[in-house]
Length: 352
Image (cartoon, rainbow, N blue to C red):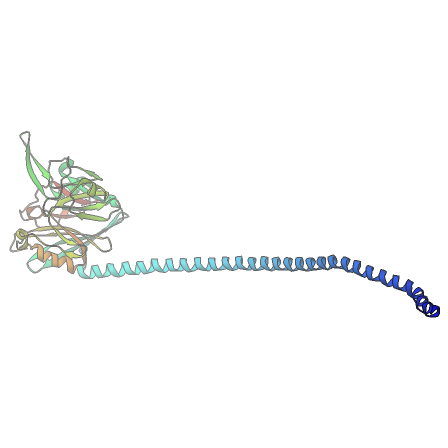
């Protein structure tokens, strides 16, 4: 029995140092593993940081490339826009030129002309079956070249068209709006009907609302034709009128013939017309009448047809009869029906 005990104990003593060493090694390995884990985490962080730096570099490169590409795209867009704008301008010029050629083809060859940095005027003969007259096509570069002139520059006074043209130094003139006589303080005054605007101001003391077919026609401060019936001052002045007169009726509005009053339909008379083409050019027409050997005059309906044939977009009938007068370059070209010029309340002149 004792021998068996010794046989079991002796090996344990012999193996004890190695068992302790093994235990120590096991403890050391656990600590080593504990130490190794943070090192691995650091390596992972370093690797992750490296990847982040690489990603940032890539982002910066991509961003730089994107900015460069965006700049290239922007420059290309600007080039295309400039090219389109240039083409648009060329097309507009071509379109304007084509439109101008069409107008001139309908009017025929001009008999006279004038051009300055303010205005271009071309004068044409109007020779139709039963009536004759003259046409001026006016291309306005400066709205200040158009002027409504009171007789002797005084409200209530009258003046012939040729006198107004000479006095103002104008190159072209036609008679203007209608007028009536008024006795004030024992004196007879010739007053313009409706509303008259000169240099942006109403010359009549009080605004006159449109009555029946009476209209106002003129130009605004930009040189564009304005016109129509106005029933309150704000509506008219809100259009910034620069020059204008009143009469009746409207013949063409937005390219469409307007109804002509019954009492005006079938009567052949001398006529004065002002209108506008779609390109902004003005047309001034004076038709002679009451002269069977020269011109019998024209009805307003027939004149509407002629205006439509000429491509006129807006057309207004001004004072006619013995008032109708056309003066160009210092000469009365038409043949006023009275055998001489009639003094009128207003004239429309084009300055050189």
